[in-house]
Image 1: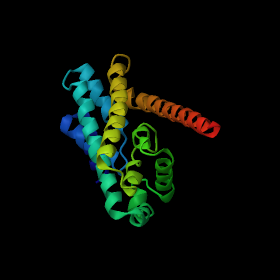
Image 2: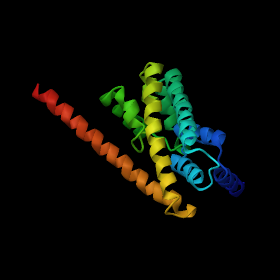
Image 3: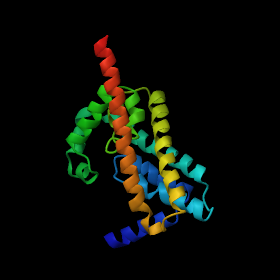
Image 4: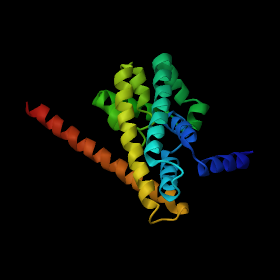
Length: 210
């Protein structure tokens, strides 16, 4: 059964269209673990190689999917509240979704410390990207601001992944694409983290000086 499911997912990923990109990115952006690196770069790779897909529409539908997945986390946290979210994170199902108390606390602390802008920046940082919607829902952040910053951050991240996939079509065979994109995406994510830390240190310094 597991082998059949794996083959089904593999076949699905090899014949991506705009609908499947939206659905898979909705899953990726919710609490279900599913890396965007195996969706957007291959779709952009095919756009460059065959022209079957349009790379700009790949980014558009991926961003729509990311927004839908983020809304799932946001409203679950909004409606259920902190006690149930933390209870779920510690459950067997929560662990299957790669959640635990430490990850939720980390995302919530990040949101509390960096305010509304963390919704935007969090979409660009590894390990925070999928979870930043939960503290936004717990804090009952206004939905308009939440969607604006979420979609903007998701658009930038998806554009980076699409650009990688589109460019690597010229220099790599497709079977090496995922490993190379994963390597680059980690470096990019850590770079964003470093930039955010530098900016925060600067503002903290200015505040202390005042």
